[in-house]
Length: 208
Image (cartoon, rainbow, N blue to C red; front, side):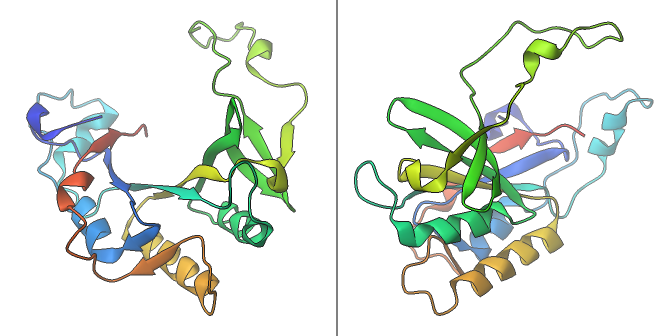
């Protein structure tokens, strides 16, 4: 996480937009992805991070959206096909959720079943070398769960690599929510005054 107190943002950081009311506003996304000064530090010219010296008009954008999709302990069945559709978007990062006392990271969907990772299973860091045994870092069987069985409180994530990627996401959500009286998400051009723009100026360092 990069903050204003740490100086200029390098161009290989991603803006983090936290959506408070389930609506992605274009002006807030544009503010979050606005150009930042190029990284002023001393960079090895042979390093791939040399690109950080180049000003970037639109940074990558991570969008996080907490939602509640039903009463306590049970997701509303009307939301299941909509949630599956969002997981199929090319910008989808999946969602964080699970069941009571069990939190998982859901990364994909097939039909109305979603595949997940358990972020609580951790191991000591091991450098990857030719002879490194990585078998214990992988599941022998993919873990899956019916969308009907997940807890209704979850957080969706999307990643837009550039402006055209964001515009594509904006268009997809708009099409999915057309004529829907109870959408999971919505989009709008301008945020209402009660939403504070100060909540969107955090930055996330992303790898290449």
